[in-house]
Length: 259
View 1 (cartoon, rainbow, N blue to C red):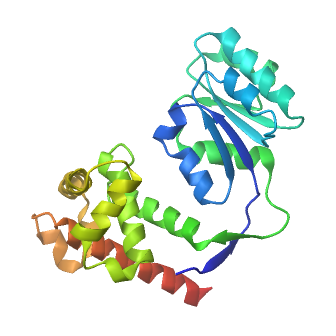
View 2: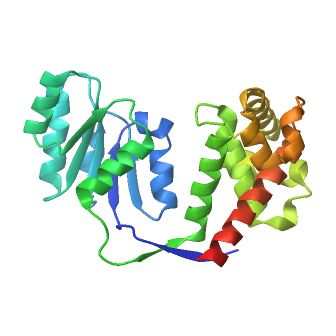
């Protein structure tokens, strides 16, 4: 399945000298949406030297151990690429934030800001695309699956979140393998995450069971049918995966017809 959808989206390049942002999947989301991303460990001086040929439109930086070190990275980022925007994630108070802004930061966000907040800030700083850009079906599918899992109470803090996301994407993208979840899908996802298939199965099962216990009845009905709100037994991995995948695929088809 290789359809494409049209969306207004600027073509960005990002330099992400940060470890914190990997926890909320910002780099993954940017890459899936067609952006060019470079990442490094939090202390990024060596990274800057090694990437002299890389000129990002925006840099996202974690606050360093000291204010002085953080200011140094902000100034280095601004100097490296003329006109590049810098977003800083910080735990410091207002006094330090003012220093960061004075040293060249274009936006200062809390250290625990989620990916949506950072993306919104980037879009505000870099502006909307003047022309429509083609966004791949894969990027659209990634976003839909991620949103659906969060709606179902399976959020990125669950180890099984990433497993389920990639499993559901596989099921939708490669329908021929849906009947071989244990022999085909789990091994494929395990290879993607450098894990064992049993670990993938267990992580997915744990995330599903924990979310099912606290899921609102109306959400159960939306995805699993009218009688699901009366069922306390958690669905199996296969039941959950196939039902959710089918619902997402149906929504995609409906959107195509409407648009």
